Length: 391
Ligand SMILES: Cc1ncc(COP(=O)(O)O)c(C=O)c1O
Image (cartoon, rainbow, N blue to C red):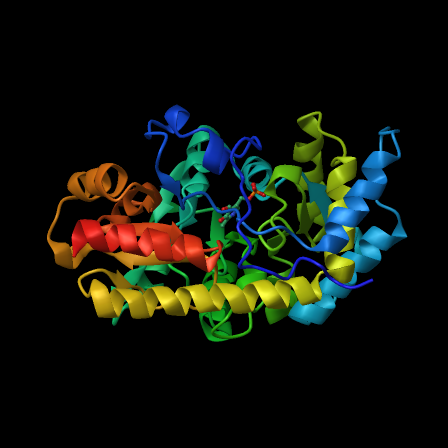
């Protein structure tokens, strides 16, 4: 059997499919006729191996309580080794219905109310939300924008940790939205600061499979001390467009940390991930390589197309250097407009629905995030609309 879903140019009509991205603009206060390029899922059909495996499991007609068989573990272990050169052990694994859920459990398990958690802004906004919703406080280590890319201010990171007696660090690696694939050296420096100061690291590596500029480094691979001081959050959901199935695999090698985590997780009353989640994850990690390689190539083509289009047609809107992800970070600041005006003109003039940069932290003012996991024809339409409005 061969992979059948490699035509990424194919337009897939997602309207009327219960899609959060397409079917609910009014709910999010947007007009109904905007082109949605916001939330991070793809407009591609996933691997045909996943579709076939789901069809087979769902046509069976019995959907009782389910658990992964050996194939689930073998697939997961094989993927981590093959794609990330990481040897995982079975007892480290905790399966959860998503990464945000997993991060929330980590916050509850490893900190007390009022404790401080550090994040690197601008960053995926549910990090701050999750910390605050659990009654903890957010400490921000702002990333530094320099030469059209972002860097870490390590001195500020350590100072903020010390000054605020920070207990937990939520690392975004690779980083959403700024598109950095952190180098081994950067990760090591962050990890060493955390070890020195007794800060546990929750490493959200959901975008790991989209590292393009360099190989992704799993935080726990940096050495024994790093492995024992971290919670590694992985998932097939971004990689294979399975967000609606809610599946993630969390690895915690340190037994003490794992026990505390599992205790917290159990206290929610949640037990096992769903049957479709188990089936899809196993099929993805067993047979999904060819599909992912095709998707990566296509997305890279979209990013390159966007860069060139902007340079040629809209030189005041700059694509920040992107090292990975299917989310691009656009710098609108040279237009000299206020965010409110940019947002208004994007939505009502260009009819485009991006994610405004401010959502990710005040450092995101003047920026917009755009999702380019779509057919080239959709991207071209979006860029043409952008040109009509802003050129
Ligand atoms: C960095 C990051 N973490 C987590 C998520 C969401 O994960 P989940 O749907 O498994 O909660 C996203 C989705 O965009 C993300 O970008």
